[in-house]
Image (cartoon, rainbow, N blue to C red; front, side, top):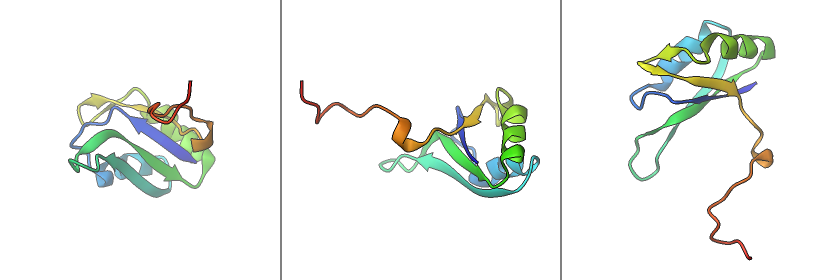
Length: 93
């Protein structure tokens, strides 16, 4: 299960985030998204857990909880192909 984590403290480390999720089960990977120009955290990331039940327990246990001084948002990540958006630069009207 791929889990989206938002509103992270900009100083939160991947190892700290992994430890929090490991309380609910096996964590396959953790990735905090970094700005490519400043190399600073963008304040969100993704956690991959192989067991869906453990992932759902982590979502239920960590969503809207204080983590590193911020109230984080934790939910199942949406597949990329289902997202809309874009900057609008290539759109024709």
